[in-house]
Length: 477
Image (cartoon, rainbow, N blue to C red; front, top):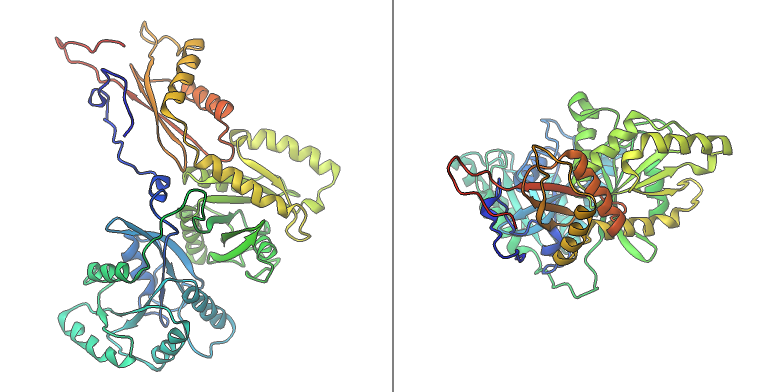
């Protein structure tokens, strides 16, 4: 609990303030790496619908035809105070070919990297030959498996789940992912099957950091993923739009394991897209939300476009740490560098705080600078300033440069606190509203004093409540 100056009561401020921790870093002080749950099954059994039910929002793409999900897609989830990652996968089929084979391979990788596997069967159809083949694959993984009998929309279908004992995976869990029947009990059983989260020792490992590779089409995101993964992890083609589903990989870079997610190129805003492009935009937005830091790739040989700026805005609005990578630097000559500097000054003026690197995914030029840049951004993203230090600094700043006078007096800061990290969030308790320009001034000075390179920061104001007519005003302290 943050200590407040004597005589300062949070109830006196508009909107109040809740100091209960919504800070992910605070949870990380007591928890280890987030466990992973993989949701697998043959095509069109309702895996994505179940994922949406687990995460509590419609984020995984659902359509009444097989093959909508093509890759393994991670989402953050929480149940009864415990956090975990749930991974949606494409339909698994034995002896699949071409694209179906790639989809099945990604599902198998999800099984291998999971702590618990949720195997989904359509109870209205019963166990099929494909389900039985999938059971053999799951047994080879030696991972705990929870059998889910989905589409049990009524009591009669629940009774049909008994036949699934024949799969040899233990008790079937009849649920309706669409309507929510039985989902609470299923989540309880998932948590019981997850390994206990180990305590994090000071300075010890905390699990792979999540990095989203984002940008407009054909800027080299998949090429960069393949370069850092040292394998053909993602399909690369000169035709824009090759990547539709986010492609995630655990890669080792600069002596550390990272979870990289390659995403579809963003052409339009989500609400303006349609068809496959809509699904790609939706999943890219989800990948950014699930990440801790986003590496935005720009084609250094082309003019910085509105699309590039929109992608950067998406990352900032999601509150993620930011690294801007100018790719294809091997193709940039002196003339282009001159004009690129002008474009950066003009078009990226609002994100001068972002970490920038110049790389070539094709040749490997300066790719080794990427990991230090990401670490620097994450360090700022998780920086916390002691309350006493923050208030001493802010008092000196506002005395040297007070807020402009409004209505005969200048509003003052009574107290300030950092409400959270990831990204850093600051709340100023004041005698009155602050101008937006003065808040930008404080944000700029915060960056100059404390760094915050590579992370957005939020500064908000809680003005003191106005007293009613005849009421006794609060003393200014």
